[in-house]
Every structure is written in C-alpha cells, then in structure tokens.
Image (cartoon, rainbow, N blue to C red):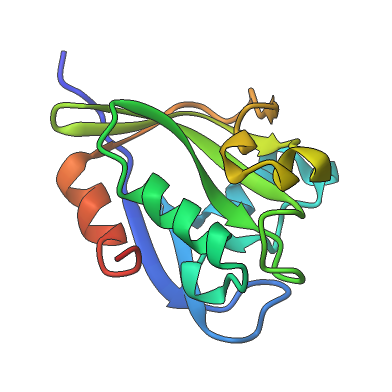
Length: 156
C-alpha cells in the first residue's frame, strides 16, 4: 500500500489576531490554527501563529527553535505555533512530535506544551516534556522534499 501524504505549505497571510503579514502553516488547504480550532473550539487555539525565530526577542529561544528545526535526529519535539500577543515560548505553544524516516516526515501527534515558568528558567529543553496531546488531530505525514522546501527559507 502506498503512503498517503498530506500537503503542507507555508504561505504569507494574516491571522485572526495578527494583522501584520507573516508565514502561516497550511495543511491540506486549511491553516493549522483553524484545523486545531475545528477539533478543539474551547481551547482558544485559533489565531496562534507559526513560531518565527525572527519575532523571538530572547536569544536563547531563537537558538533553541533553530536547533530543533535543523535537527537531524529521527525523532524529536518541535514548537510549531505560539501566541501572537507575547511572541515567545512562555505563553501558549503548540508542539509537534516529529518522526523522520527516509523520505517522509510525520507529525505523529500535536499537543499544547505545559512547561512551567520554573521549567523554562532551567532551559528550553523542557519544551515538549509535559504536553497535553490533542488526540482528535490525526497523524500528519509529508514528503521530506515538500516539508524541507516549505521550511528551509524561514529556518536558517
């Protein structure tokens, strides 16, 4: 049986609470925040924006994000959406459990990071260790080439 892949795009646009044009993650034609909102309308996830290193003010946060996006490990947790009000990793952060195998990249599951401020004081590696997984969101699978091409220009 052949793999069925999701379509992933990173496009310029505006989100619900951020009227400045920025990159938006779109899965199968639907923005990721809208997809999360559809399944979890009471979680206030609509309007979250893609984690953008250039918008992070704390140098440690930017370095952490770039290290995760450039990770060559087969399996890791990566922050993908953040709150547009604070634009940092201490507010609402949605993470993906990423598994890379050959020519495919899977977001096995998505969840809301629950790292405490105390955890964050001891390092950003706590992100993804305490997560409320969003079980209604199915695994999302992409071709390595599509995934890499969509993120390569924004995570250098």
